[in-house]
Image 1 (tube, rainbow, N blue to C red):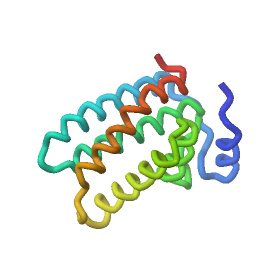
Image 2: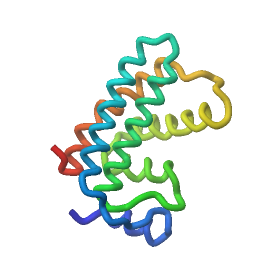
Image 3: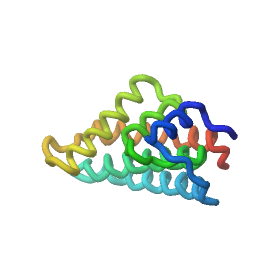
Image 4: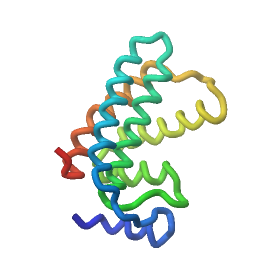
Length: 146
């Protein structure tokens, strides 16, 4: 399947790089995303929702990786944020969902690299889990992966 022209434009800008596909990687990314979802859901029962949020965020990023791999590109100079934004468009997230995912990316970076305060809330973790759960089947369809 040809990739959307936006990917080619991002390759020309050196934000992404065209790569040869790694055989079998898309189904593995998607299977791993399901594993992260299971861990995130279990983590909601813990007193601290941060690990559940992180598991859901990382699971969503595996959906991003699966789509990038499907279109035979990888991040180059742009990093995660641009890749997340581009794939959110392909997965057809609503504006509210898109906003939630981009805020989740910022929260993940802030709590990982700058300060653990304020701590991740259970509402943030639950919202990210809902996004991951909803878009796993969409990523399967987009990548033609059973």
